[in-house]
Length: 190
Ligand SMILES: [Ca+2]
Image (cartoon, rainbow, N blue to C red):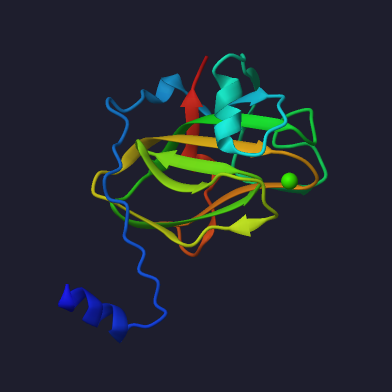
């Protein structure tokens, strides 16, 4: 305990983010022929204040499949939310795979308005579950030893006014922090 305190006092103000290192790749890896570009999305027309409320509705509502999301790079002001036909009151259940082509350290940033939860390889790496204005996550550090396709699940909702859903990374083989590119997303063909 004394050692821990010493370290904490020695680095005042330094936020120590512990990396997520238990992400599980898809097993088996999806066959390339079974994959389509982008992430699949099901929409729910609901007025909610939290992901928890959205999940409550999802227990008895059918989602409506929308056009796949090529990337998560939506900062659209008052326009329609993601690929839905609505500019407000949208819940989105987003599923597919993200390709991490090299082992190593990935740094993610999530930008959201309103609530969002990001789960990769079965591990929740970020949640900001309530109504909020555009807000960035802290840096989210992921370490993997096994390259390949990892399942990704993003649960998201937009209540009203402006909406944003963006996912950035700084990844081995990709250079500086930027949107996770379209080539790194896929979903199973229907
Ligand atoms: Ca909003």
